[in-house]
Image (cartoon, rainbow, N blue to C red; front, top):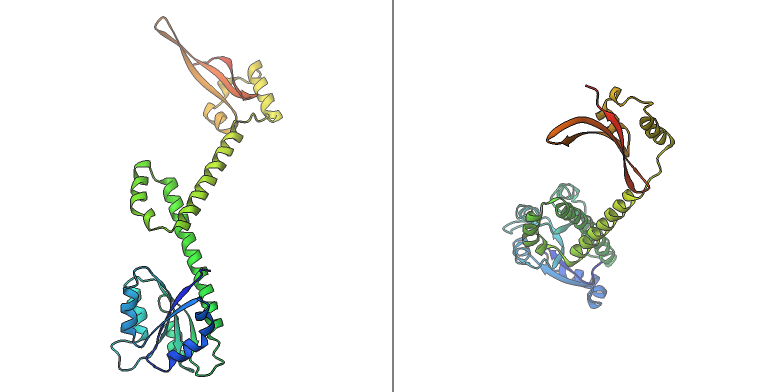
Amino acid sequence: MQDKYTLLFVDDETDFEPLIRQLLAKEISEGKYDVLYVQSAQEAFQMILNDFERKIDLVFTDLKMPGQSFDGFELIEKLRLKKISIKIIVISAFGDFENVRNSLKKHNVIDFITKSATSDFNLPEIVKYSLEQLENINSESRNVRFQTLVKMVRELPSHRIKQLVENVLPSCSVEDLKQMQHQLVLEQALEQARQREAKKPVPFPLETTELIEKLKKGEIDVNTLNIDEFNSTHRGIGIYEKMLTRNGKQYGPYYHLHWFEDGRQKVYYLGKKKT
């Protein structure tokens, strides 16, 4: 979790702010939270719109605010329409379960708390739990965004990567970029290891060795084989046709058997193709 969080409380009741600050006094004094408090949804909306650096981490809003230009429901909807993804906790009056149920279906509402004027209102634990939820959501979101960026970098042609660097990467966090660099380096190392492994001489299974010997000895008539099917079926060996040119004339085609042995390519002449 980050060192300090900014919490915005939105409630039209003036006596609710002192209670909030009292209940979070320890965390505020320790520098864990900055607490902002406004008494109208409209003021909160403008504050969030002007929060260009996205310093507000979590919004706690009442739903019913009589006599105001708009209430908590409309605040949530306006933020959705503006595509502002700030997470919201709904503050509800005790027993107002219908409004709570409706609010939880709204965009970016992750939880609710019930108002209480008593000291047993365990706000510090509720805030801590909500921030842990927020961290999990942000972590999942960063991971999805990061995996998408890695996929883009890996699959884009070189001339498009320049556009990606210029237009997309500047908006990424340093943490995202370091993680992406680490994964790309790791993938590159794994690919190099796979390539090295592929180049190692692999002992032929007995049946493959026997097949090569039978072809070389003529015990298998190459003219009776479906060459394409043979090559796709047998890993590490192949039969290929080749034309020879002498004095401007072409002869053939001739069959040649190719295979790898001890890290080297071997070629064996199997004879002329019968036509």
